[in-house]
Amino acid sequence: MKILTKSSTQIPAAVSYLYILLFVYAAVSKLLDFENFQAQIGQSPLLSIFAAYVSKGVLLLEFLIAIMLAVPRLRIAGLYMAFTLMVMFTAYIYLILNYSSFVPCSCGGILEKLGWKEHLIFNILFTVLAATAILLSKENKDTSSWSLKYFKTRLT
Image (cartoon, rainbow, N blue to C red; front, top):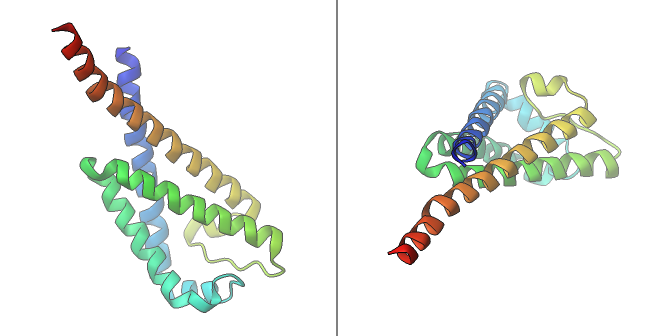
């Protein structure tokens, strides 16, 4: 039981650190070449109308989520936001791959070197990591606070 409790606190922290690395790296890469990033978003068949808003919004969200994941008190909310953003990115890639004749690339840094199918797999992996971290955080929170309080009141 002690090992399960310890790993269920370490895994969400490790996943959070991976996401911090991912989001800060991606945001800085996009920020350093912002005009190109915004132009690539403008070429997207799904996002061209909203390119200015989406490009700034993605950067803001990536930095905000990274900060939230770095603060233990905000970590679970950050994990939910990271999960949601990765689901959105994954859905976007899926739609582009399957329903678009033009496939723009608006990723930064190393991720730009991945093909779209590899990028889809990468996103799915990170989405699963976030979901796992959320489930372990929730499970850990439930077992350490609610059930212990419940059993303590029953035993006394």
